[in-house]
Image 1: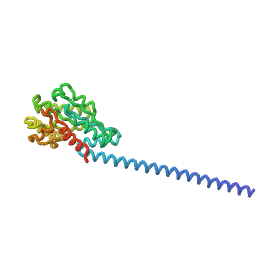
Image 2 (image 1 turned 45 degrees about the vertical axis):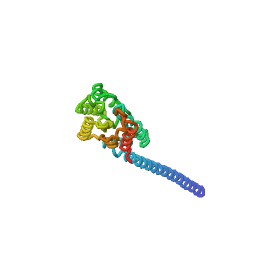
Image 3 (image 1 turned 60 degrees about the vertical axis):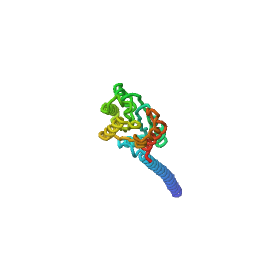
Image 4 (image 1 turned 30 degrees about the vertical axis):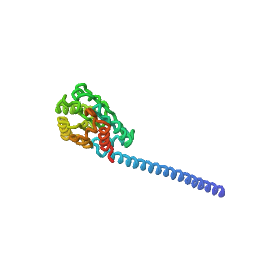
Length: 255
């Protein structure tokens, strides 16, 4: 009987030891997996932060509201939308869009383009600004039809129409940021230069970013500027579009 009890006790002790060893191995393996997953998750989060910082560095020139919206879009893995608005002469958009896509990735930046061969008065009277609002863009880059208005709509009317466009877009999308830019320069512009100066002052008074791409062209009193325009100055030529487009690329992709 004593021998039997001894054997039974030995079996129980051995079973406990075996069970404890197996349980310890399982716990160790589980902890190792959890640790590995935690490290991988942390590395992934740190990698995303580095990538986000790189994208935000490229967007350093943007309006503060646009940068904040872009950061939120990155964090929520949603694309940030830029809407370009202007006249039918704006043929630089394709190059700018391509460079934006190359720099930020199509999953992070999308673009849309609305061009109108109309005066600002016609656009507002036909409620074309509602088309812009429907795009739900976080950033709108607008050239407010100065040349189309030239000789047809006084600058006060142009600026009032611009205000109406901005207000109606923000009514639907309050966080939308706006960037203002003039149309292309021409040789000896006379009254047109006065319109452009008024537009620049409007941007400053309303705390709107003003992209002065005229600095990338020859001066308007320099005959050299004719080499950037079609013969009748009705639109830029290839040189003009290139100067305009490169200015915008350097702004939107800060390097």
